[in-house]
Image 1: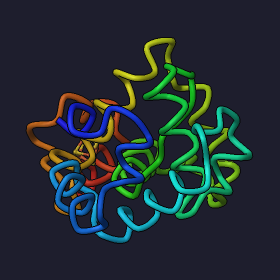
Image 2: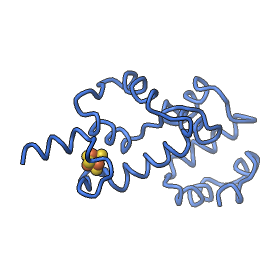
Image 3: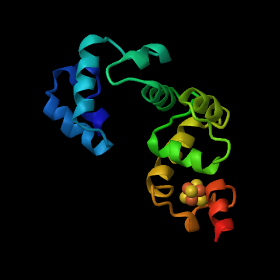
Image 4: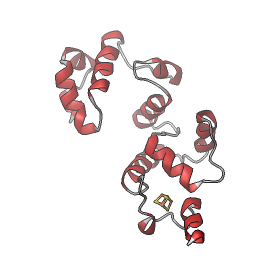
Length: 155
Ligand code: SF4
């Protein structure tokens, strides 16, 4: 829908922030992202294709860089939002690294060749199953999850 509405960067550049806010809202983004998107298209002819430049974009960062490269090109990179971090930190409870850099290294080796499908599934899984109040009894991974196994042992 968004791509049908704004097929070219020039189409985004011509849109008002209010229009962009309305268009990205169904994607789960808010007006702060619309403002950043507008700033990016007004200052770039095309999106950068390397992580360092993507991280420097307005509202950029490791998450934005990895998500862009994975979902746009299929690059084998971890995409760690708050929900996905929660999933990993529970499943690998005893070995989950503390620093962001170590978490990226840790998760990089887990991402399969089908990185796009894997990361999309993890984002949904973190948002819908392994929530703040996790649905462990219904979870396909509870046999392997240290968080769940620890809670079972405590009962
Ligand atoms: S068993 Fe529970 S804590 Fe572990 S991954 Fe599944 S939902 Fe999350």
